[in-house]
Amino acid sequence: MTTRVRLGMLTPSSNTVLEPVTTAMLASLPEVSVHFARFPVTSISLGASSVGQFEPAPMLAAARLLADARVGVIGWNGTSAGWLGLEHDEKLCQDVVGTTGIPAVTSVLSLVEVLRRKGVTRLGLVTPYLADVQARIVATFAANGIECVAERHLGIEDNFSFAEVEGPEIAALVREVAQSRPQAITMLCTNFAGAPLVEALEPEVGLPIYDSISVVVWNALRTAGVAPSRVTGWGRLFGESP
Image (tube, rainbow, N blue to C red):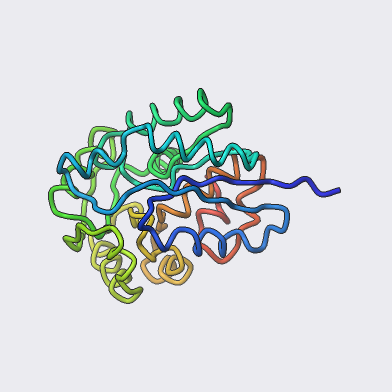
């Protein structure tokens, strides 16, 4: 009998991208299913009410619901550690394990792990975020030895609206950042429809592109004991897993 592998994802309530993209990404793995639990997130800014959306209580309540589905790993499929600091996600992982007994991964910590494994110290950054949020993300990467040599952001605060940005606009931002010749590019936002563009954009710009949904799926699979290389058509992250 085939052993079922269940992945759990903590999901911002207004996110409409990560669920269909993650499901499509895993479609070729018949024994793997993915399950989602939402908690309230509607805006991204440095204001107190926005930052407060990422307090541990609602995230852990969602994690407990995922635990009821007996998932093998719980992923925080969001990028708040980009502006709150990596320690925010490190503490969240500790709390999820302590609360549920289930291993935990996050999008931002997974991205940083990929960049370190690949020796990336010069990064291109593309997001839909506000300028001050973007500046905080740049500072977080810098504090961890990763220089953002080029960045583009769209100045949007409403989380639902991130998903309304269409592929050609995202691709144009990636191409602009690529002109500075970073070692890699990240599209940092799990409500940003960037992952489906990666397979075609990477050979065009000649650089690896690490989407924030892709990296958490990559790490969740590894943690659950499934080879990420079995995922095809979603960029070199999976085919050339670090």
